[in-house]
Length: 180
Image (cartoon, one colour):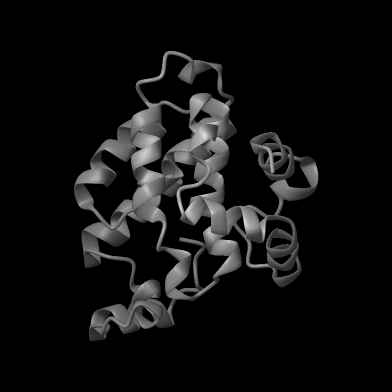
């Protein structure tokens, strides 16, 4: 599979409305089309894609976004977050960073938002504030607030085998399951 296929799919008009929704049909489509690609990414086999910034973006989408689509509410949904974050961190130093659209940069930065590190969220706020677009910084602030309050994302606790605190259980009861 070529990284262009990932980008054409993810940034295509039919997909954009599905980015942050829980949709079993969409998840099945991702599984059918990109399941093998995701497995290769998990094994580090897509490393040639990193030669270009858009190839790196495609690998991040596979590791960060497709992991969530393919493994919704399972521990594997977040298993590749560290690798996606490293790839994103390295991308910031690329001279062609500014050639990406705001949406492309937002997905390049999404692993920062998905991190359970308060330190990472401090830098993420700076990065997302530079993006011109609908709601990027607001979404980062919402994520950072959860990390500041709990030190982790409570919605992940059950799948990750973590014991929720009473405060986390009350929070979860009042919220629908997020994509992060």
